[in-house]
Amino acid sequence: MSEEKIPPILAALQRDHRHFARIIAVLEHELERIRNGESEDWKLLADSFEYFEAYPDLVHHPCEDILYRYCRDSCDASLPALEGLEIEHGQIAKITTTLRQELEGILADGMIDRELLARQVQEYLAMQKAHMRREETKIFPLLRELLRDEDWETLEKVATAAVDPLFDDASRRAYDALYRGIVSRGKPG
Image 1 (cartoon, rainbow, N blue to C red):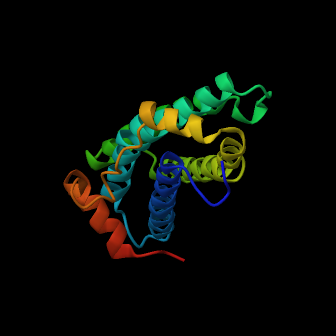
Image 2 (image 1 turned 120 degrees about the horizontal axis):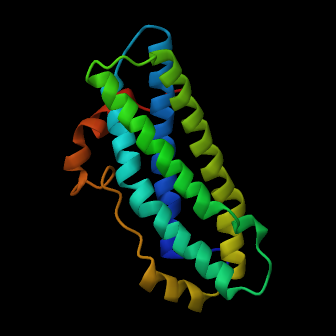
Image 3 (image 1 turned 180 degrees about the vertical axis):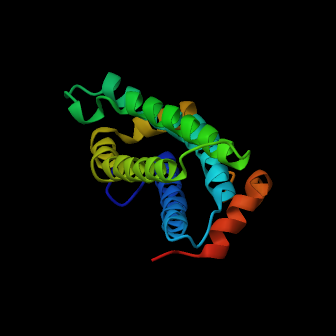
């Protein structure tokens, strides 16, 4: 694959990562405010985890998994860099669901150690950032190096990248409150 031409499916996955990074930055900022006693916007956190469950875990990661499997199955080289990524996606999905449920418990006035939950959310966000950094710096460049134009054409047919409902005007309605929360807080830092 030529260096200047990014396959559309890979460009969409990278765009998703930029969107996820934006949400993560807002959530890190929100966690800092919670720790400082400035805010308790648990709804924003709960909505974020609902989003992470609905789009990255159910759409984005399965699309990546198709690319990774295809590359492993069609390339002659040993690809240790791709090992474990599908399992990692499954682990992320499990933790996402657990944290969403705990955050919903807080919203329902459940008895939950809020400081412990804030720490768990912070660890989750760090894990997500490390995961995306690995994909952006190691995995995606490897795919571009190993896959040919014909491979990308095949992948476009079987692993269609979806439109992110949070950042697409037409489909954002379901996540409108979360989107407004992200936009109103701007880019922290």
